[in-house]
Length: 362
Image (tube, rainbow, N blue to C red; front, side):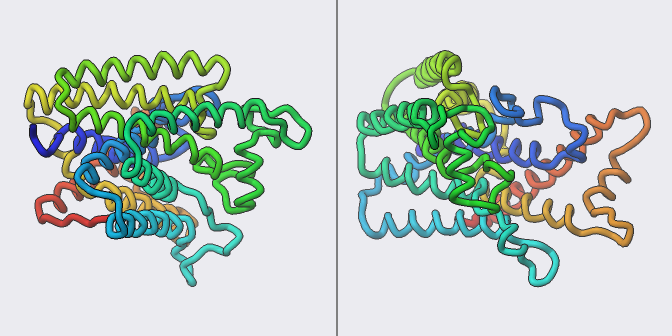
């Protein structure tokens, strides 16, 4: 069997490209509905992007550590990478272009995308190294069921708990009490404390797919499709009593998003690794420096929003209004074209880094 699974690299790079696309529209006032997050319950294609990345983190853990034995050296590398990811995330949450280049402490957001990736990577790596797939499956089921019971059945300060955006929502309540003002929203954070638990399962489900890919099992495409369909059905059934919700990272959301991830990966795997069709190389290149590309896109976007001229117009607004806004083109299309341009730039950056053999390990 080939040591390298091309589809995993393509999937990772494609996910990073989508993360950049949905994060950098020309204007948030004009975005096509599929490129917006669901307001609360339910999901859109955009809500699949982050769990897809956590899923492929889990799959990649299998390739990275399948021949490694647990020990101080391996654990040290895991801890160092975890701290790097969390540190980069905290930097993004704190940085500002004005001296002293840091937001006032009370305005710094503590949770974030890179922080969650770091915590999930840490937990999933340790679990993978120390337990077989049966134990991992038991842990995943326990977390998903336990999260449902906690969120839906344990009273909160004398009130029945709710899945709505309210004070008696356990995830929101814990976020507010743990992070205070250091959150994305005033009452909750989509990368909050409690919801990080089920997000670990998103990576564990990716681990199971990784174990399939490195196994000698035949017809892996069919198995991934069956896994995907099964998770989708179970997730949508669970949605009836535990709504699909990205902000809460509900158990039904974990299953549905992992289901879609398996189906998408199965398609890419069949085309690239089974049929050996050459496509998606630009995504492979970006995937080779996935965290670096994502970090740079977030960092530069923040600067473009903050840097303003004397009239108070940001660099972002100047570029968008000057180049992309024209009569005869809807504002939504202009906004999308801006996002595609930004995404294309970072894909080319990934291609350039790959050609120059620049691989920054984070």
